[in-house]
Image 1: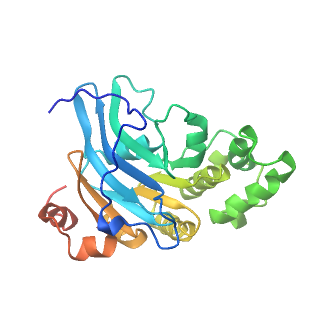
Image 2 (image 1 turned 180 degrees about the vertical axis):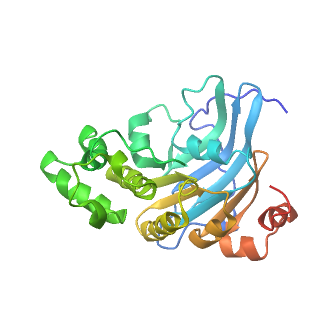
Length: 280
C-alpha cells in the first residue's frame, strides 16, 4: 500500500472518537495526556503507521505491544518528533500532548522534548559525571535557578531509586555505573527536564532480571506523577506494569483497552493469538 502523506495542518482535523476504555481518568480532567487523531507515518512510499486513533490517560502506564516491525517504536518516537531529521519522513493526522499539537507551527522542538521525555532501549548516559547527567538539561533549559540544581539532582535520583547507591560518588562518570544503574540514571536525567509524559522504548530489554525488577518497580512508582508510555516485547512485563495496552500489527492499532481485560478477554482474535504466543 502506498500513500502520499503531508505534514498536518493545525485546525483542519476533526477529532476521532475516543475508545470507551480510554476515557480520561476521573481526576485527570477532560483532556487526555496524549491524543492521536488519524495519524499516519511513512518513509517515502513505505507506510509504517496507518490511521491511528487512541487516547492515552494521564498518570497511568500504557504499554504498546506487537510483533517486530509493527510500528511500535515509530509511534513512540512520533510523539516527540524524533523522526524529523529522517529522510523522506512524512505524516498526516495529528498528535496532541496536553491538548497542543506536536506539529503545530509554534511548537518548539526543544520545548516538546523537554515536555515529552524519552528513555531508550540501551542505557546511554552522557560522558559526564552522575551529577552532570541529571543537571545538564535543567541548567541548559534554565528550568530552575543554578543554586537549586543540587536539590533537583537529588530529587530526580531519589525518584529514580538511585540516590542511595550514588550519593557518595556524584562526581564519578555516569558510564562507571552498572547497566541497570545507568538505565535508572537515564530515567533520572529525563525527569530532570520536568516532563509531562515519559516515553520508554524497551527500557529493560538489555538488563538482567534483578535490574529489570527495579526498573519495573520504578515505573509503578513514577505513574503517580507522570504519564508513561512503554514499548515492550515482554508480555509478562506489559501485564505487570501497565494499566492500558495497545496492540499493534503491521502498522495498525488492532485493539486498545484496559490491560486486565486485554490479557484475559481480548476482543480481537489477533490480540489473543499474539498474547498467547501463537505468532509474533
